[in-house]
Length: 373
Ligand SMILES: *Cc1c(COP(=O)(O)O)cnc(C)c1O
Image 1: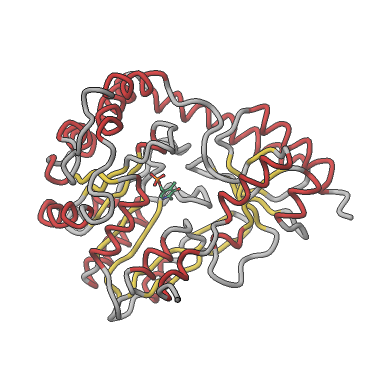
Image 2: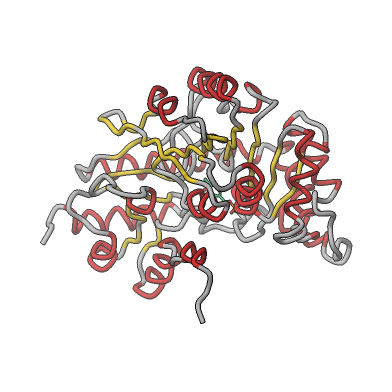
């Protein structure tokens, strides 16, 4: 007996594989992007209080108190919010709902790995637009983006602050994207799971403020609150579509876990009120600078991220598994973020780790990178 060919989407992901190997070899894990520190106490306490009070099914659209908390944050009505099991489910439901066979969705490359299987499982084609990579780092070529749109294109998928590049798009770039989408009649999917992790002077502009009638914003409590295992995410979008999206997400996980939704609802308010995100950004900015300066000091080319807790750098001639063995540092190779023909020697470093871990990784890399062999 044979499984359906669509299960070709089930190929092993490099992220958990690297984590498992790193644990086995006693390596510093700067591969998979999860914090190595505990989530904030106010989140743990809020979830603790919710257990025993929110124990049965939540509505597929989400617990009213979480939809209200998010509606306030995003300046929309609660009907404009659907809660999902992580941003991963949000993206799955959106692609199932927006595109199908014969359609194309434009995706920027390098990409977060979920986008391509999601397009494939919806029967649609992902059309890739590769970011330019020059001395100054990654850059979106707006002409290339426009050139990728065909009469079959139904949606553009953007991610900013962007994993893995750390790019934050300028308002001018997003205005051009919004204008293109309007002219061509396209939906916009804006993956903003790192919306609070930016190092620019002001918060990244939101696509939904430029094209509210066609933009679906995807977010993640796991990323916001440093608890990637909690699996609470959301979609914020035009009210007229959100009832249908809630109806679609019934058939995946029906609803996200109720106590976690309740705990997250409370924690999102506390985080905003008590300056949690400011403190988080400051901590990450310090670690970003430590890693960036450390890599430069080793003579390596690194690209300073303006957002996220990822940094891309070049280790010419190295391959991820050999590096793991020799240096005992786990990194994600650039090819995980490209469909074909990836730039050589490019790696993603996750710096959502303790400063000691970053220092140890730099020390270990220093011992091998300039002595090849
Ligand atoms: C982590 C991540 C997601 C998935 O978020 P979850 O809430 O953990 O499912 C989506 N998009 C990007 C860019 C991410 O880095």
